[in-house]
Length: 101
Image (cartoon, rainbow, N blue to C red; front, side, top):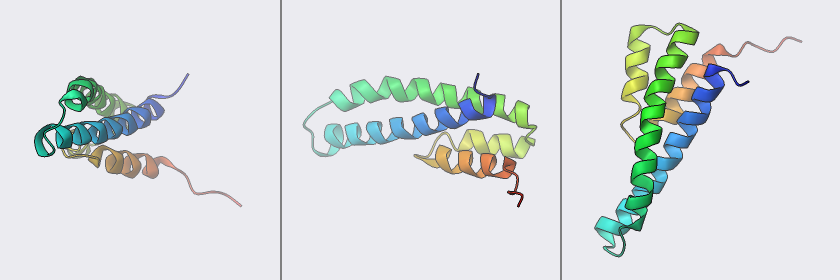
């Protein structure tokens, strides 16, 4: 069974991908003014993944014993597009141990 931190990684990646889909959908809806389909499809998907990302930050924080400021940063990274990827790599990169020779 995948660990909490691995699940957090998957959710962070999926949340960023849903951002990309939603941004493309918003382009076609508001800039090109051709279709609302992208927003109708990716809006709810992104909303669900946003909630999962928030839950993932809280679960990963508990498992990895992150500080309160780190948790706040992780939650804030749910808002701007693609920052969930930056936060995920930053936090999980800290857990990797150096390779032994």
